[in-house]
Amino acid sequence: MSLGQWRGYFCALVIICALAIPAFAQVDQGRIAGTIKDQTGAVIPGVTITAKNDRTGEERSVVSGDKGDYLVAALRPSTYTVTAELTGFAKSEVTGVQLVVGQTLNIDLTIKPAGVSQELTVSADAAEVR
Image (cartoon, rainbow, N blue to C red; front, side, top):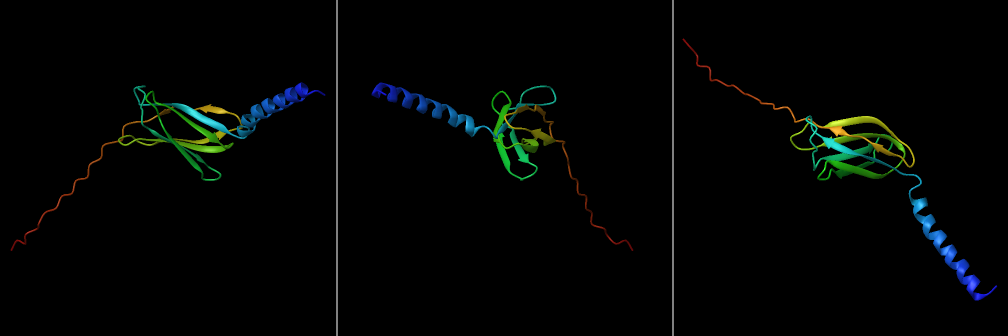
């Protein structure tokens, strides 16, 4: 074999290895993506989305973008609980989300304004009447 043939085989081997590395890195992962909207259908940016692995308790959080979109990547196959939280809004939660290898689940969430609650305390001094 000539030096040129060895060089060609070596280059081919390097290219194959370089292409194989990303494939191995993503074999056992999945992703959850979607859009956050309010009751009227308007997108909501700045919402914290958390994907919690129900089996291990591991959590991964992201914040929705300007168009209300989010992507939680590098998740192990499992069952997840996905929550969306933003100050001034009620927490939205989806349970029992089954994620498998290589899957990108699309879960659009709707959050509602939090209910307004007021607390009223009434106190009075009772005077003794004789």
